[in-house]
Amino acid sequence: MFPWREVMSVGFGGLGLAPRDFWSMTLLELSFALSGLQGPHLISTPLAKDEFNALMMRYPDRAE
Image (tube, rainbow, N blue to C red; front, side):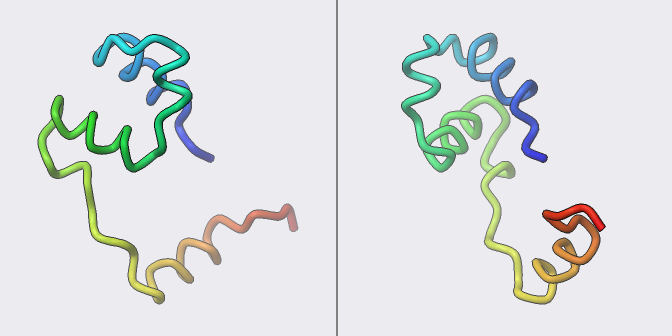
């Protein structure tokens, strides 16, 4: 589950974004904005296929 509460807290509180500006941003734009607060370590390379598959196995989208 995406941590919306934490991201919104940083977007509104840390970055001082207005709601319309926050919700009009893409996740990539938000990532770059957040990197200005925390440094470039928030921007990561994409997961490798085996890493992605391991996450899908551990956290499936459907209940079993």
